[in-house]
Structure formats: C-alpha cells, structure tokens
Length: 314
Image (cartoon, rainbow, N blue to C red; front, top):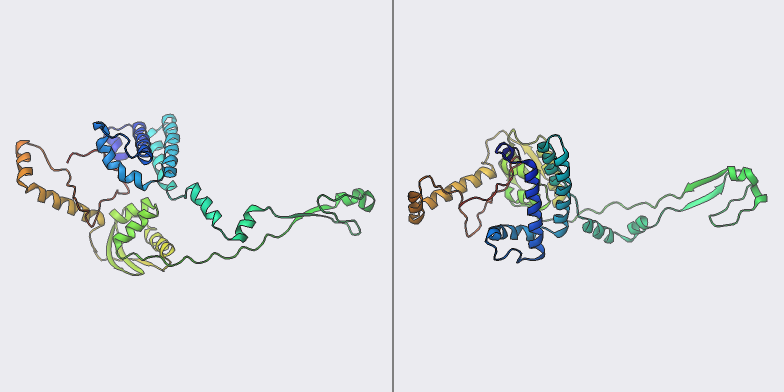
C-alpha cells in the first residue's frame, strides 16, 4: 500500500478497485461465463477464475462488507492512507475467522450433551430462607399464612450447577508436511496470510525433518515467528514440532528461489529467435514475465510488505 501511495495512487481509489474485484469474483463464482466475449475483461476472467473457484460466496460477501465499511471510514478519516492500511490489516486477520455456516455445522456436530447445555437455560429454583417457612417452586401457589412478609423478604434465587463438560477429544493425526514448501502451503490453507508471507520471504531454511525445523529468520521476520510456527504446526498436524533458530546461512528464501527461477526463465526466453527479433525490433522492450505451461515446483507468493501488482505486460 505504501509503494502504491508513493507512486501516486489514491488510497480511496485502491479500496474502490478492491470492491470492484470482489464484485467481479462473485459474478464469476455464481456465473462462470460472466464477462465472456468482452475484450476489456477477458484477461481478468482468465486470472480471476481460479480465485473465484477457491473462494466461497460467504468469504466474498464478508470481504465486500469489510471493504464497503472501510471505504466510508477512509473517506471520513483525517489520513485516508492510515485508514486504508487499517482496513487491509482487518481484512487479512478476519480471514482466520470461520464463516457463520461453519460455526453452525460445528454446533450441529457437537455431542448430545453439549447441545443440551447450549440449548437449555440453567434451572432456577426458589426457596424461602427463614426456617419454618414454606418452600415453593416457580408456578406453585403461595400460602400467605405460611411465611408472610418475612418469608417474601427472605426469598432467594439460586442456580442449579451446570453439568460438567467433558474434555475435548484430541484431534486425529493429520498428514505431515514433507518439506518446508509444504509447511508454507499449510499456512496458506489455514488462512494465516501474514505468517505465510514471512515464511515465504523472510526465512532461510537450515534443516528440515519430521517434527523439527531449523531456520535463520531475517530482521524483517517477527520475533514470535518460530514459536507461532511450532505451535500452529503441532495444532494442525497432531504431532509435536520443534522450531529452532540457527546461525548458519541456510538455503535462499522461497522468494529468492522463485525470483531466481523467474530470471532463469526470462534468460532462456531471450534466447528464442522469435523473442530476440521482437526485442531487437522494439528498442527498450523487455521481458517482464514468463508463464510456464507446466507449473513450477516453487510458485511466487505475496510478500508481507507488498501487495500484488496490477496488469503486467508479458
């Protein structure tokens, strides 16, 4: 967002563009042929179709509401840039929250005892405190001669103790990640966007084995990254993972590997006679990106401090 702002982008316009994107993805989700035949959006359809297939309507609707509310805040805020940055942070963190439909499914799948606790309120019994006065239940008649005003003054309400809730069952063992790239993909699957971006760009892997990871984080990585990495992996996989910091150089970050791969593809493409002829015919032209027909082993992912750029010329 900062790079866009320094390049002259209006923060409010950026939010409006995001709203248009969410609306377009929702159209693609509900009607896969939306915008078909329109040259102005044909490229957007090709790029947006995989994203629309992965996202649910509930997630898109939630993103729309957050952006729409954030647009109002940005238009009224003294600093639109700060307001938009807060909207983007809010949008990133709310992605970790389950959708209402998932919460309902979780409640529906709870054990019978848990459902009964959630469905029925605690019992309330009424007793008369002074000795010798008559106790009565809710809905029963009250005999004035049995206690009189003093009995009413001593009326007490006590709640029956709630039934004990059984301890949560341990989660069954899940497939274990076989590489550090699989770990990053696991964070993407669980919508941990910020931690995933740090693991992609700001971590050098030193050693990887089942249940143990050694890494060298850069200064841009948060201090709590190793602890969070180990905690979440243990929670998601059902196996204890230990993450330690090493002083060894380690491998290049996944971002550096992806950039090296992209540079190699550009260099290889530049050797093609047809591409060479185009570059020679148009002085100043350059190869921005190369798209492979078969997916590469390492795919680029967004950084923690960068937003995806717009259209690029290939």
